[in-house]
Length: 281
Ligand code: SF4
Ligand code: SF4
Image (cartoon, rainbow, N blue to C red; front, side, top):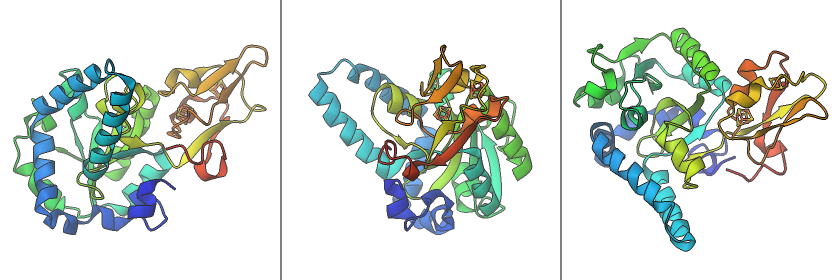
């Protein structure tokens, strides 16, 4: 179990606890202000991304201190966790509304509208979270062609998320003023600031999934399709055996490699059952 499961999930998966999606959490004015600020000030996010690039050239001790400070702050404000499609389905079974919006990261890194983010709320009408969004300048969230955020059925949203997997995007769930959860994003290492921050700059702003991938060597045909998709460089290939293998110490447990495996040779195991990965978050 990750730290958030212990703190916000009473020892179960924190993102499957309905209380963490509750409108009651939005009675907290600081949380509301953070959401308003985060979804309005894309220039600030751009500046912070530039600062992270500069941090790479700082002395190692300073990088370590800054990494701890940034990570601790983000755990309070806006932290994520990788999760496989099965857990997205469990979240969708619990919530009342799914709305697709543009990704703030891609707005900053690519200057493009990419609809990779899904706001989720318990209430079918979107509740207080949608009230907050409606009060903002939504131009980047909805894009130039769509005046309103796009409400999807859960089946439509799941189909879109499966398409994102085949594009190589990994699902992540996010807090806005922890433990309040407002959305599921679809990340990649090139354009997603959180993944860049965590994987490229070694400043963690998201946990690995509660799972780890494993290849069944008897089923693997050695086609290497899975290697193309893994964002974390966790899959290796043995030319001698003509088999792929997953390093559990590098695997984030997203499960997207399964979506392209023609032999159905990859499974997810609970992280806690894999000793070398059990304490890696
Ligand atoms: S090997 Fe692990 S991290 Fe890489 S795609 Fe598969 S499950 Fe995700
Ligand atoms: S995609 Fe499946 S069959 Fe192909 S190398 Fe990976 S695990 Fe093996």
